[in-house]
Image (cartoon, rainbow, N blue to C red):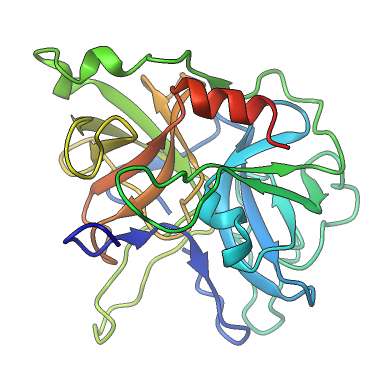
Length: 286
């Protein structure tokens, strides 16, 4: 890594015998505003559960997520995406499955092509690791079954949308909304407390920190999720959208990418999607 900081990917991997799924932290609310945000489960070449991330449908078959979730180095070969707000909320550790959604093993009866879809077509934007500031941390999952019933999908912000915020006064109060299925509370490994996860799609408001630093430099967006009425991202939120504006916005300006520590203290970094090179790649990833 080219940073003196320890960078923590915001994806979540699980052991076969322990599936502590990982969600939005601090002041969050259930996300019923963005039904196009899904929980993405990845599988390796043997068909075994590998890791999970979040992602956003930007068309009936194209789901935007993080490059570190889809890159060959992740081990991912296929994927399944759940669009239920409580996609894994009923997970039963004794069976290893959520009986309502089928997470993480199957699509529940009657949900394929509606609340659930499969994929064997994964792409990444040249991700080779967290070599900040340019991480190339964008990925795509192309669905086998179109999810066409939605009234809206995520919308990519035009190129340069965030550029004016890099120098403008008062822009650090700019509001963003983050969404995902990740960990809500991360604790020290030897803590008497347990990690907290609801396995549900949650969202929270965050504010701008900067767009021009050694870790951002025009490629990444740094936001702050600490403080009253604000929330951040954690493990499992990787690939989830960062919307410009309040909870009603569907305009995506970033993809949740990494943090500076495993405890998710509210300083978050997203890979900017309002860049011409990224927008062009999303349009034609092959």
